[in-house]
Length: 140
Image (cartoon, rainbow, N blue to C red):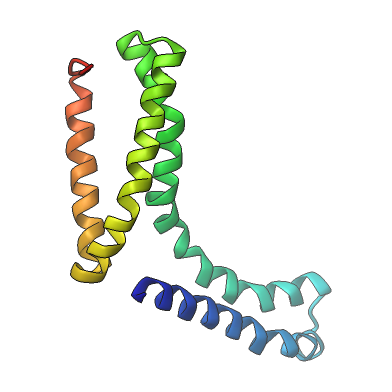
């Protein structure tokens, strides 16, 4: 619930900034002698800058999940010589495990705090990547 509240507050602040600056656009244009494009930039830049801070967070969390979902079958085929069918089945297992762990991650975030959970998850992912780098044998 905390994360939903924080996301809602962040969205509301960005929308509020846009709603506050947008009506002032014609005033900026007249007093500063701006073109229509410059006026649009004056109104949009604060909102865009506020939103840009969310890009790295999205890339590290959900973006990492999506990119790993694309990468895993190729890794299984090239590093371990699996057929497309076997790689797809193991990928399905990864997706199922990820879906089942989402409520657990939410529960842990509520109990321990989202930052602590993300730090722990990133540490586990880093350790798993280090193990994967030495190309261990594949368990059946």
